[in-house]
Structure formats: structure tokens, C-alpha cells
Amino acid sequence: MDTVKRYAIVGAGGRHEMYRDAILGEYAAGALLTGVCDNNIGRAQLSATWAREQYGQEIPVYDADHFDVMIRETAPDIVIVTTKDSLHDRYICRAMELGCDVITEKPMTIDAERCNAILEVQRRTGRQLRVTFNYRYSPPRTQVKQLLMNGVVGAIESVDFHWMLDTSHGADYFRRWHRNKENSGGLLVHKATHHFDLVNWWLDAVPETVYGTGRRAFYVPQTARRLGLEHCSERCHNCPESASCPFYLSLKDNAHLRALYLEQEPHDHYYRDRCVFSEAIDIEDSMALAVVYSNGARMSYSLNAFMPWEGYTIAFNGSQGRLEHKCEESVYINADGSVPGALKREGTYIRVYPHFAPAYEEPVWEAIGGHGGGDELLLQDIFDPDANRDDQYGCRADHRQGAWSILTGIAANVSMQRGEPVATRPLAPALR
Ligand SMILES: NC(=O)c1ccc[n+]([C@@H]2O[C@H](COP(=O)([O-])OP(=O)(O)OC[C@H]3O[C@@H](n4cnc5c(N)ncnc54)[C@H](O)[C@@H]3O)[C@@H](O)[C@H]2O)c1
Image (cartoon, rainbow, N blue to C red; front, side):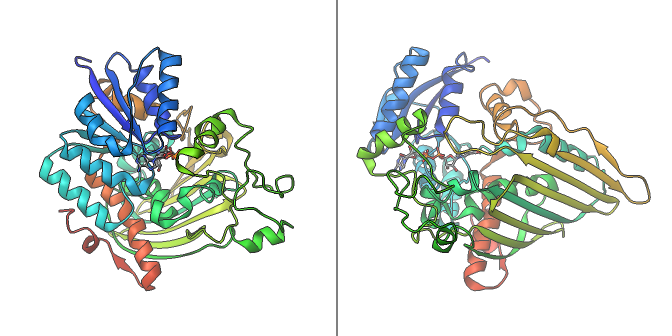
């Protein structure tokens, strides 16, 4: 690495810690953290305290109203956006306007209007915008990419893809800001942006038409009553049903959750432990889609957020056979200290069924760490790009791939409203 890059982070919640610690720790030789910004100044200060205590560095903090001031005073080359999803566009666009490149967490944004706005600003400013699809970097998923690139089952004609979120991780989306579409776009955007990005990447194609259906089937008041929970509060903290509710989350008993959320509540009144059975939720927990791709392939996809195990099954039906991949992940609650999405090795396989020949199993590539081993490799690719100079599997995603990854979910949201298939391209005229 020849030069030191300057980074500022906006959004000081659970996810920003991974980037902050990478900059201050393993990649400190080539990276400098210039500032941290959040509308909750307590959370920003907590991050600065961590930087001081763990790394001996003083990091200036800024509230959201002073984002421009942070950019002016600390002159970052790159802004890392880790706010809630509905605010990504605001900071992506402003950072590019102010002359910075941007690395944003997924989803790039949550609806067509904001997607077009981002694409327009990127075009006008010419800045680089990178969307961090850590799932691409997970070794078993990279392995599937390689097998398909090698034509192991020929041309892909159709895909059967089914993702399970469990009653730990899946439930967590119904406690937090994700529970409302105005914040997250719903799980078809917030979560499935990963899945649809993987399919776009695996197939080397883009979605053309989407038909979507969905409903909230499980995280509803009736489920609370079925479980005998008659007196649920609006949040877990001090809920009278805490002893009997299988979805009870204690912020006060987990040091990290307590410091990051409970103790910062006075600053913004954001409660991270809202009841998963609340009437106020408006996202779906059970969704099914039919998608047509630019290469003619068809996909049937489902996402259910109340399953007993977490992970996915996918099958690629090709002109020369079928590839089946199943991946079981461990369970987690965001920011409670456990490793999110670590693979359960015994539950993960790749099987190839060639036409007119015996089926065989591919030994699955090793993966250790968060999100199927993807987080570590993603960080290395961001902060030490020489280690993966040729990016042979094309894991690095730009604004265009960020846009295509959300257009399936955005079109599905429109399709659910209209009750008919929706074409993606008219939604994003700026995606030229
Ligand atoms: N790639 C992955 O696997 C992965 C995993 C977790 C989260 N994420 C993404 O990271 C992002 C953050 O998620 P999280 O889990 O850290 O959520 P979080 O709620 O812990 O953090 C969000 C932060 O945004 C801040 N914020 C809210 N309004 C703001 C404003 N107006 N200006 C500045 N900051 C504001 C909040 O105070 C909070 O600190 C999301 O976009 C999420 O999709 C990605």
C-alpha cells in the first residue's frame, strides 16, 4: 500500500464497528479514521471512546446536522455509510457532492426515486460508489460462482431459491427500525438485496420482470395470543411477559446492547427492543416472487422470516444438469456479540447432477467468520485491494450493481400493490 486513505463514517450503530475496527486495527497502516457522525451523539461518542480505549486514537464526532462540517474539517477521501437504509441516499449523494468517494452498506437505497437520485449524482460528480456485498465474498458462494462460470451445468434456464430467516435473526427485524417500510423498504429490499445481488452475479444477468406476493403471517398479535402472551408491552424492556415470551430480548443484560442502544435512548428515543407482535409493524414476513432475467432465466424465490433454521437452498437448472447448494447458517441477534451468519459446516453442501452421468458432491470451500466468511474477505478487499488485485470473480460492486440488486425488491413492492408483474427498467431510467 503506497498511500494512506482517509475515511469518515456516518451511522455509528452495530454495523459501523466492523469498518471502524478494521481501519483502526488490522488495516491501520493504510487507513485513517477522520470522523464519526450520527444523529445520536451518544452513540457517536461511544465509538470515539472505544477508539481511544482500544486503539489510543482520538476520533472527532459530529451530529447529523454537522455532516458537512465533518467533511470540511476532516477531509476524508471516502465516506462509509452505515446509517439505517432510508438515509443512505442522503449521505451518499451529499458525500459525492462534497467531492468524496463512497462505500455504502446494502441496500444502496430503498425505493426507485432515491435510486435514480443516487445514479444522477454519481453521473454528475463522477465519484466512485461502492456497495459492500459481503455475501459475494463468502467462499461457498464464490465457489458456486466459479462452478457456474466454468459451465458445470451449462446455460442456466431457471433457478429455485428459498431463504430462511429464523426466529432469532428473523425476529430481530421486527424489533428495530427495519419493521417499517419507510425505513427499510421491507425485507425484499433490506434483506433480499443480498440474495438478488447474488443471483444477478451468479447468472451474470439482470432482472427484467418481477411478480411478487407477500404478507405478514407470523409476527402478528394473534401469534402472541396463541403463545399465551396476553399482556405484551410495546417493548421488551420491563414487559410483564418477559419470563414467558420466547422472543424476549433483554438489552440491559447484554453489555454491548446496553451500551449501544439502551443507554443512548435519551438522545433519540430509539427503542431497539420493540415487541415483534406489534400492530405498528408494516413489513411482510412471508414473501414469494417470480422473476424473469435478461438472459431468459426464470427464478422462483421465497423468503420466510420465522423458520426453525437459518440459511438457504438454491438450485440452478441448466442445459447440462442441475447444481444444488444448501447453506445452513448459525443464528444471531445483531450486536449481541455472537458471530453473525457463521456457517454450520455439516449443513452446507454443493451437489452437481450432470445429465446422463453420476451426480457428485463438491467439497465446500472453507469459510470462517461473519456472514459465511464474507466479512473478513470484504474488508481485505476494501482496505488492502492489492491482496485481490484482479478480483477474478468480480466481487466488487459499484452503483449499477447496487441499483440492480434493489430493483427486484423495489419492483416486488410495486407488484404487491398493483397485483401484477412489474418491469424493472422503467423504474430506474437513470440506470442507463
Ligand atoms: N452487509 C451486512 O451483512 C449488514 C449487516 C448489518 C447491517 N447492515 C447494514 O448496515 C446499516 C446499519 O445497520 P445497523 O445494524 O448498524 O443499524 P443500527 O440501528 O445499529 O445503526 C444505525 C445507525 O444510524 C444512525 N442514524 C439514524 N438516523 C441518522 C441520521 N439522520 N444521521 C446519521 N445517522 C443516523 C442511528 O443512530 C444508528 O447509530 C444498514 O443499512 C444495514 O442494512 C449490513
